[in-house]
Each structure stands twice: as C-alpha cells, then as structure tokens.
Length: 620
Image (cartoon, rainbow, N blue to C red; front, side):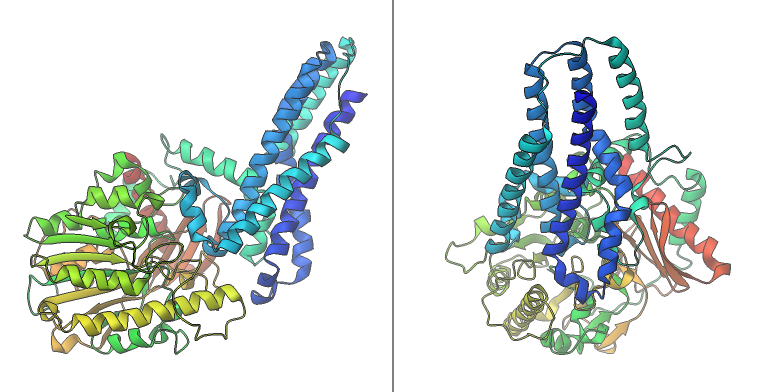
C-alpha cells in the first residue's frame, strides 16, 4: 500500500540523514583519529552502535507524518501533502543546525550540543566571533549544502504525494494500531523492561567515538527534558536528602578554625587575573612542556603555586560563580543563566566593598555571552568595563581586545583607583580563533588548532610578563596581592578526555610583594578548586566566610582535601584516596580509581556533594 511505503521511505530517509551527518562529523575531525590514537574500525562500529538511538529518533520524527497518513487514508485532502513537506523541511533544518553546531563546538567543548549551550544561541554574533572567519563560513556552507541536499533528496526520492484516500477502514484501523505499536517500540528501543538511553551508543574507550555515536537530536531532546524536569525534581537524588546533607556537613567540617597568615597586611589591594582556557599542561611545574609559559614560570619563583587545583566547571560563566560566589558548577545548566537565582548567591565583591574596597572588572570582549554580564552586575562591581567601554583604536581580534592592551588599561585605571581596591580582569586571547597579534613561536603540536592555542597562551604569558614589569613601578604594587587563575581548561597536546581530572587540572598562583618571605616560591600540594578562593582570601583578611558554604580556607591545615567538578552529566570527585567520575545520563562510572575498601565511602561523599549542591541550586 502507498501509505505503508510512504512511511517506510520517510523512516529510511531519516536513518540516512543521521548516518550521513555522522560521516560529515568524522570527515571534519578526521585528524582527531590520529591524535587520539583511534582505530578506524571504531568509526565503522559507531554506525552500528548508533542504530538503536537513530531508530528511536527517527520514530519520534515520523509520528506527525504517520498521523497525517492515517488521516489521508480516510480523508484524501491534498493540502495535507504540503503539511508533510513543510514539517519535514522544518525538521531537516533543525537537525542540520544541531549537527552543524556540534561540529562547531566540539573542538572547544568536547561535548554534544546540550541544553546549557542553547543559552549561547541567543547571541549569534558572539558565536561568530569565537570562531575563525574561515571556520564560520565553512560551517555555514556545510549547513546550507546539507539542508539543500537533504530536502532535494526528500522531494525527489522520498516524498509520496497522496492523491486520494483508501476509503477502507479495514486498512486504516490496523495501520493505525500496528504502526503505533511499532513506533512506540522503536522510540523506547525495543520491548525489554528498560527503555533506551544514550548509554546504548557508548562502546568505545574513546569519548570522541561515543559522542559521535549518540544521535544529536536525541541527545539535545533528552538534555532539554532533563533541564525542565529538575524544576521540580532533583535529577541527582542518590540518597535521602537528610543523609546526603549530613555527609556534606562532615565533608566540609573544619576541626580547628585557624589559618596560616601568608600576607604582610590584612587589607591589601587585590587583583584577580582570570586566564581564559589555561590548562595545567601549559605550565612546566604542573607537568606541562617547557617553553610555553616562561613568564609564568618566573612568577612562580616569588609566588605560591597551587599544584593540585581544579576548575569547577568547563565554561567561563561557571568559573565566575565559582570564583566570586564560591558556588560550585552544576551539571545540565549554569546558575548564571538564571537571574532569579544569582541574586541569592553570596558575593565576594560586596563583602569587600563593605570593608571599604573600591571594585572593578575588566574584559576585552562582550560580557553578555554566557550570562556573565548579569552575574557580574549583580555581584556589585563599582566599575565594569567591556569591549564597548574602551577606545575603538585599541587593537583587537574577532573576540575582543588583545590581552596586552586590556591589561595595560587596567594598570592605568588602578593608578587612579581608591585604595584598597579589588579588581578582576578576564583575558580573551587564549580563546579561539586565537588571532593574537604575534608571530607564531610554537609549531611542534600535531594540529593547526593546537598550535594556535599554544601560541595564544605564549602571547598571553608574554603579556603577563610585560604587565608585571609595569605594575612593579606603580606606587600601589608593594601592597597588592595578585591571584592568577584559569577560568577552565582546554584540550591540549595530551588530549585528555574532557571528563577526567587531568583535563580539569588548572593553574592558580598567589603573587606579590605582600606575601611574606617564608612563603614566596612555595608550592601548595593540597587538593583544591576555584570555589575555595573566596574562603581562602577572606580568611587572610580576617573576615568571616560563613556565607560561602562551599568555600574552604586552603591555608587552614585542618580543612579536608577534595575537589569536585561537574562533567556535564554528573560528578567528578578527587580525593587523596583516589577519584571517580560518574555519568548520571548513562548511569555508569566512567572512571573509578579507588581502592575497593574505600569505594563506597568516597563515592557517597562525591554523590552527596552533587545532590546537596543541585538541591541548593533548585532552591535559590
């Protein structure tokens, strides 16, 4: 029958679309196979392991065409054909947009397109700025070609124009019932007791292959559903909430409320320099290759380097809430995207303003990206300067003003600032498209993108060296504490999987003449994270950090050692006794490096931490 043939052809069409889109992804990132030592056979296997989710997604998509066909089998109105065409075109465009966006974000994020990323789509000009011009237009070309190709193929080979009804209820009723059952089975992934999840497509030890195997449309749909689901229910409900809260209280319990003072004064000026995308692999003292950041290495000799320090999240806006509010990053979504919630967060800035500090924040790009602007504004900075607030003549790239110039602008302004001051600066040059104004000096990386990243880090490092040479000549320098910390990490020549602690390992350095002599050149090896900056700093200023529930004082020898980081789908937990990563989407431990007799206790700590954290996020 024409109705069955039409539906079957549409189903096969979508299966081909999914497979071809996956192929385009592989072709675009073909170089990753060699850099990550991936066997090509895994690529072929991925098309097989992708089938269950592809079938489920195709079954979802053809529900509307199926219902139209049921109606046409009874009532053969020709205009229903146009509804099928319009619907199919819209879904083609949406799916191609999702698949193409994933090509664009993978190099930076190493993830599927998820609900959190949708917040960026409201600022398309910023998306354009973060990519090189060539990359942007290449992706736009891929998008247009795929839409035209898919729709042309659909019109010519798939679409069946229904001219008249069958007028046969003996056919229509069984067609409705049997096909409905088949679609239901397809959507849930078979007739087994447990319905399909994204874990069905996970089979490789390489996350690149696993992510490519997961259907892009299905992944985004589930991410969106999960995001709305937690408005009423905590998706990380591992234990009874009272039990989880008790565990967290024990984790954060401090036996002795004391601190080692490492400053010569309790009211220093404070400057936080937030380095875009700086991985620990850029720092020789943290295991990185030499020659990438030689100026940072010089600074270490007079500063305090935190060697076991981790980024709480993997996006810039997550870093802002971790640093200035001491609030850990959450999976699924970022609290900075929720204006109603960020107003309830504690504020390091306001705390310092109450003590007479003048405050300022500098960024060479546009702060609206990722909701940073709303958080920084709510945080209470007296002065907030972004790209539009600076002279148009300052040299800039696609994403913003180059680091050396924005650093110089802050220095000039601080000479006029009321002391004590608290000033933050967020660099931009180590973000793609890496168009810093410097000839490349590093060329040993295997890919052009990696060389671009390393050279941009070299440039920012050089800018830091120049910055401190100028800062030392200022009258306020001797009374200033500088905190240099990364916002998050980045893919490096080591190609750590994004969910590992190696990927989340970032540098933090306390620096300045205000540090007592005994601590200059020291290394602090305690496990820690960005959320601990507020508690540590306030303790040095002899101020209460009681409002910063999640933030520890790293100079209190009795504080427990651990680091939490979100993985997009779950929790990463690092402790002196081992670490694990749990993916709540696929309900599996992606990493488990803990002695068996300690496993239950440490897992309970990490999972309880995430559960209580997310509950607090929901309650804000």
